[in-house]
Length: 209
Ligand SMILES: Cc1cc2nc3c(=O)[nH]c(=O)nc-3n(C[C@H](O)[C@H](O)[C@H](O)COP(=O)(O)O)c2cc1C
Image (tube, rainbow, N blue to C red; front, side, top):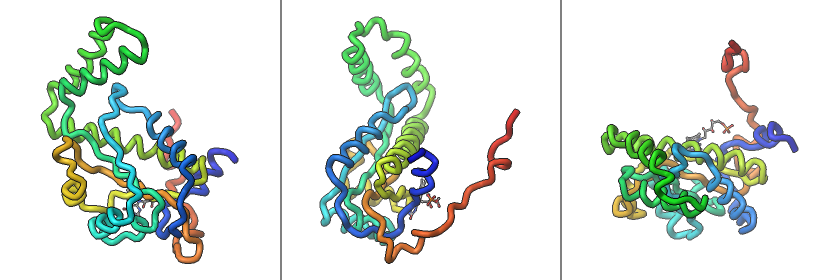
C-alpha cells in the first residue's frame, strides 16, 4: 500500500477493542519513534510504555475518562525534559563520540552550538523546546503506526500535572506532554470509524511560489 493509502486508513480512534498488538509490531513502532528527528539530535524526552491495566485505570480519569486509555493494548506517555542541562549535553556528546568513533575534542563546535543555543533560554523555554520535539516524535509515531496497520489515538486531552504526579515525573526532571493509545479500532462502537477525513484543501494549505 502507498503512504497516502496508509495515512488515509489511519484516524484518531475513539474506541478500541482491547486486543493486544503483537510484541513484534510494538517493537518496530518503538524503533521507528526512536529514529525520529529532533533538534540537535538531542531527543529531549523519555517515553513510558504502559501495559499494566491497573495503571491505565488510574490514568483514565486524568484523561477525562477517555475510553482508549483502558481499551488500548499499550499506552505511551511522552514526557519532555524540564531543562537542557550541561550534564545532559555532555551525555549526548559522549553518545555521539562513541557511536561515530570520534574524539570528544572533534565535537567541540557541535557542543558549543547546543550549549550556546540553550544558554540564553530560561528553563521554561527549554522545557517548551523539549516539548516541541515530542510533537515531532508523535508525528513519526502516527505515520509509522499507519504503515504497520496499528491503530492509534494521539492524546493531549489529559491533565499533565496530575499525570506527572502519578508517574513521579518531576523527580525524573520530566513533564508529560502527550499520550499515544495503541491498539485495534472497535468497528462496532467507534462512531468515527467511517467518518470522512476533514482536511484543508490543497490550494489553501499550499502556496506555490
Ligand atoms: C496533539 C494531538 C492531540 C490530540 N488529542 C486527542 C485526544 O485527547 N483525544 C482524542 O480522541 N483525539 C485527540 N486527537 C485527535 C485529533 O482530534 C485528530 O487527529 C484530528 O481531529 C484529525 O483527525 P484524524 O486524525 O482522525 O484524521 C489529538 C490529535 C493531536 C495531533
